[in-house]
Image (cartoon, rainbow, N blue to C red; front, side):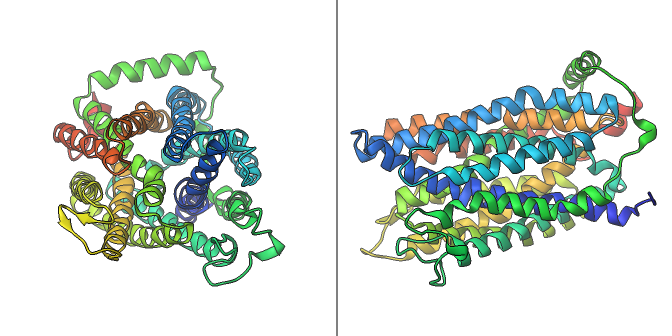
Amino acid sequence: MADVSLKKRVWGWMAFDWATQPFYTLALTFIFGPYFAAVATEYFMGTGLTEDLADAQAQSLWSFGQTAAGLMIAITGPILGAYADSSGRRMPWMFLFSAIYVVAVSMIWVMVPDGSQIYFALAMFCIGFVAAEYALIFTNAMLPSLGPEDEVGKISGAGAALGYAGGVVSLFIMLLLFAENETGKTLIGLSPLFGLDPEAREGTRFVGPFSAIWFVIFMIPFFLWVREDKALQKTTTFSIALGDLKTSLKGVLKRPSLAAYLGSSMFYRDALNALYGFGGVYATLVLNWSITMIGVFGIVGAITASVATYVGGVFDKRLGPKPVITFCIWVLIGVCIVIVGMTRDFILGIPLPEGSAVPDIVMYICGACIGGAGGALYAASRSMMVRHTTRGRPTEAFGLFALSGKATAFLAPALIGVTTYLTSSPRLGISPVIFLFIIGLILLRWVNKDGDRNTWNAS
């Protein structure tokens, strides 16, 4: 087969972000997540629980699913990455996990309104989530081969920006043509396409098949244009890979900048994921938003994410990723303070008249900030990891990056759950996220802005 140009390889690599983002935008945050919480609440109320207890049970179930998926990724991700690096082969894994992702995500269609399939649907969601994260590990590991170090930040930012743009487009399609509101109509007053039954919430449930179809179509450039160097491929075993991983883990302790960065990103990414995973639930419980309002909230956040992520990539190229990460964390801390200090009746202690639209407006602004800062933070974090990646072991390194991102995946949901229980307030329950961001910011002080790959590789 003819050689593929570097430009095509870059575009093929970026296609992954475009292809997978609808899962995170639609399924995790703005469509399926809030729908799952609403259905689960009704289901548990049907068992005799009060609404408050049913809300807590639904949120606990959603948290448990994400925690289980996170632990699976944390335990196995670095091992898979080490094996892929030892063998020099990543594309077979991409085919495997892509297939698992498509099947699993399609199956969340079974989440019927009566709640009879909540456990199966949650299991399918979690399997799809794990498959997507595995694929992300291998895709991220290809980033260092796409350009010189001073270009990697811009490439990472452009890829993430393209992904968020895909999230915007997919969310528009779902809201305008499929996801029904309380009246059974979409955002523009249409019945769901293809004769989908609004009474059975088939328009909303179509989020699963839609995300899978989107992935199949837009991963075509990835599989056509992304290539591996066959000269680097060799036979290996998991025993050899585990030995290499053990050596790498010991090596982390000898690399202060890498250790500090993995620790910092562990906390701030956990906090950011909590904002993504619980944002829709928060808007439902505290502000009584409908799925449509949450969808618009998602569009605002996704648009700003797309723009800000690209801009963040430009600043990453000029200043490096560390200043971008620091700025974004401060923005997110400010957003969390506002969210924790806001209800329908007051904002940061200032009383509001009854029926005021200020909380809605402020929440939309917060959504824009979360989308923008979160997107730029994601891209800059990936770029910073490249600066700490050992030559010849990029997949393993991003496996460790995934480990740091998932090792405490239970922490934010657990802290939110405990705080909500102790305060009986979903609003105050978000407050631990602030402290996770602060811890991440403190640990970032010991991270070398230029990474340590050059000094470490030379040692």
